[in-house]
Every structure is written in structure tokens, then in C-alpha cells.
Length: 302
Image (tube, rainbow, N blue to C red; front, top):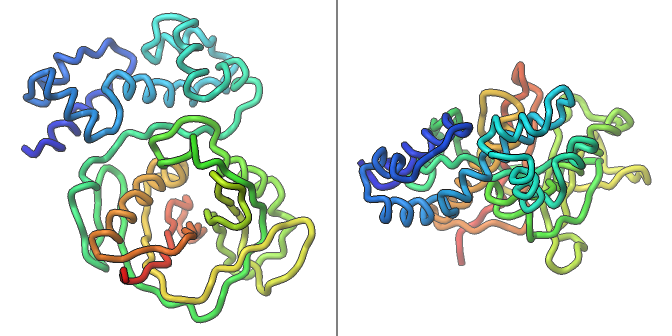
């Protein structure tokens, strides 16, 4: 068994026992490693100390329950492995910058530390060959776009600190809030036939230490509408990373973060570099909307 496989066994175990007391000695035994070496290896591969990782995964599960006002916050805390309301509140505020009560009254999109899929750091696929791992299916292909595609929607400035890397940061999910605004107002956009939706991070005129994030819908022609921002997908060749997940919620959170990280590794292994924008394109073609694509503006390194 490879070292990453041993750690993945314990990551899977943790996810199934978050509400229980989890002993490091027990995890080390599962990995067939000494407690000392196991903790060092876990921190290196998962990029968080074991106790901190368990805390973040418990918080991620708790945030799913908090909007339900029929559940007491104390019960949610205990159900997710926290021994008191105070301990839970302190951990929640440190991670997200607000108390559980504040989040319950005004739920916002939050970044979470995802359960990692360590296989994606060690297995490489060729173009046109699907990779299947832990509920994720992804595939890379080349695509040439001959005509730019216009989109209308909304944009916001996103501070890099607290948002990156994807799936390893906690706090308010500002791109998620841009999407929320778009979904609340997209009925007013005159969309093209079979219109796709896009989310794209790029520099734009964002202040130092931030980037611009745009969420919008495909339209027939480039047009000015002062109710919306516009963004044009440039004509060029792209590496398209298409991927599926079991449902839409998984697609836009865990699957998206895994695909984004794997895409960076895939480009590096194929000696490619990417331009300073990264479109994510959503389709309505599948019954539950669980397919999307990264269009990677990649080219050979100089």
C-alpha cells in the first residue's frame, strides 16, 4: 500500500465517524503506521494537522444543519462531535468570522475544507480517457472556439486571502454570493437558445490582493445593459476538463474544487501553462444538472 493510500483509509474512516471520539492511535493503526509518523504524513498530504482537519470537517457538516431552526444549536454541536455550545461557537467563529446564531439568522455561502481525494495527486490520465474516483468522473479534451461568446451577469471583487486554495479555506464564499445574486436576477436576461451559465475568475480591475469573479448567462450578441456586467469568452484553443458528480450540490462544491486542483496538476504534468482567467461552464443537458466544464486557456510553456 502506498503512503497516500494508507492516509486515505483514515480520511474515509474519519468522515464516517465524525460524531464520535476519534483517537489518533486508532487512526495510526488503520494506516499501519506509528502515531508519530502517521501525524507527520497526514499533515503533509492533507495540508492540515489531524485534529484541525477533523474540526473543519465537523464544522462543514454542522453548517448544513444550522439553517433548520427546529434543531437546537447545542444538539447540532453535540451531534457533530463538539462537547459544548461554547466550544462549537468558538470554533465556528474562528473558521467563518461569525457565530452559529448569526449564520442561522442570515445564511450565506461558506467555504469549507473538503474531504480530500488523495488519488488525484498521483494518477494522471491522457486526453479522452476518463478518470473515475470517489464519485467524480473527469476527462480532458482540446476544443477550438472560433467566435467569442458573450455573457451577461454580475461580478464582485474577491480577496485572495480566505478564498484560496479551493477546498482548503474557510470563511464566507464570496463567489458563491455572486452566484446567489445572479440566480435571483437571471430571469431578466434575454438568453440565447441552449444558453449556458458561466463562472469565471480573472484579474480585471480588482484591487491588489483580490481578483474579479463573474457569474452570468450566455446571450446571442454582445450588448450593453446597465443592469448587468458583461464578459466575453475569448476565441482561442482550450483544454476542456469536463466532469460529473452524483448531484448538483456535489458538483459545485467538492467536485469543482477537486477538478480545479487536478486540472492544475494535469497542465503541469503536460508542460502547459494557463492564462489569467479560468471559466467554469454549466450545462442543463443532464437530468440533475450534474455536469460542467473548465475551459482552460492553456499553451505550451515557453
